[in-house]
Length: 304
Image (cartoon, rainbow, N blue to C red; front, side):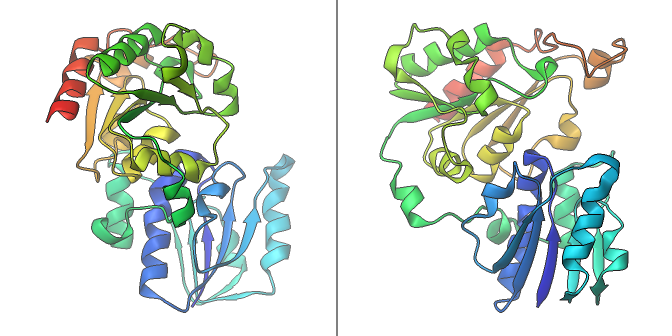
């Protein structure tokens, strides 16, 4: 089978739809996949077998990146196309069949993809990594946190994360790895120098699959609604997932039975309805999310 797989451009969405690529590779041992992905999620696919070609889609003015992609693919013959960008390019390419995925706003995205493509939660819900990456994680009894996000309103106040770090150490955790992007690394010192070398900055320093390997062996993960939260869920790590001004009914990783939802008392609509320009809003909308709720779940995970 020759498959064209057009992934989502955002990291979190790309992680969620990896289950579909796993399903097709599992069911078609002779598959040849042409992968199209944005630059940020592309490292997720580095250890996949079955991918014969990788094309990084870079956004250009007037959507000319789609035209350029068409000319790269127009002479190919595909058996099937899966498009998570909801584009029209598959209508112009040579293919026997296609599936253009369009997200519904009233159903959990994990469930939507699972039902639409009939994925197997036990066999398809993972990211392939080579054994070398997994063995490179030698630390034990550690935690991972992701206190930063690409949108300030969905960040839980940093002082609460500091309290969580202290709680983790009090509960016997020996190290805490802070995960995020290169931009997030600039904010690492806001977590305080109080914890010395026990708090380790991994923001933007790790390959994404090395972050995934780190999460696979982590005792616990705590983070906002972000790509790292979805990566932790995919790693089947006990995860405390913090939601406020984003819709947990849509984005909470509910296919993972080790993910624990904690959200603010107000709904995401109540939190955002009175803000005229959300894109430029630069204050946290997570202040009322209870530290006591989070600390209770942390203790339950570590002592359960």
